[in-house]
Amino acid sequence: MGGSSGSSPCASCKLLRRRCSKDCIFAPYFPPHDPHKFAIVHKVFGASNLSKMLQELPVNQRGDAVSSLVYEANARVRDPVYGCVGTISYLQNQVSELQLQLAAAQAEVLSMQMHQKPHLVQQDRETTFLMAGDNFNSVSHYIAASVIQDPLKRESFST
Image (cartoon, rainbow, N blue to C red; front, top):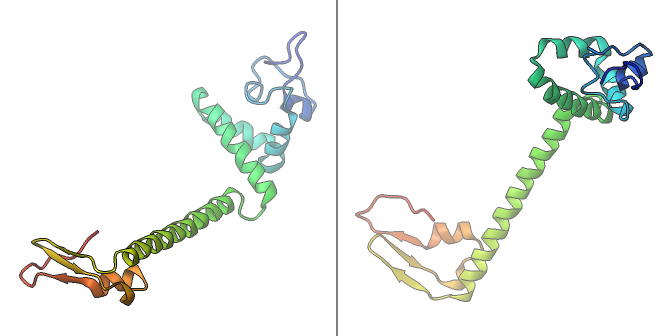
């Protein structure tokens, strides 16, 4: 880990041009073969701040913290204003758009199924469905226009 006899210094000590001691706080998380990992974190947060953050954490949480800091540093370099929050926001917007597309596709499938069975009459004790094929262009129109509830039953229609 540290730079004791025969081993190379960790990436942080190498970049900072200092001797890597056996109790170096950075050595377990910034190995010498991956100098870019420390360089980007150092550029965004600084070695002193990073050292303080790691010292305040229990040893078992430091690895996860370093992973998070590396991720945030990379995001901050790509997007200096928003960092990883910009990525999260972008992905949330994508999820919303895909949910809308899925709902539209499901509505279209239901509409196509209705047109394939234009005069289906299904009766049960609670609700009567009357579908007249050509009168329905969308699922919302279908639900609004074709569901006739038993006047004695006041529950809402649910699919």
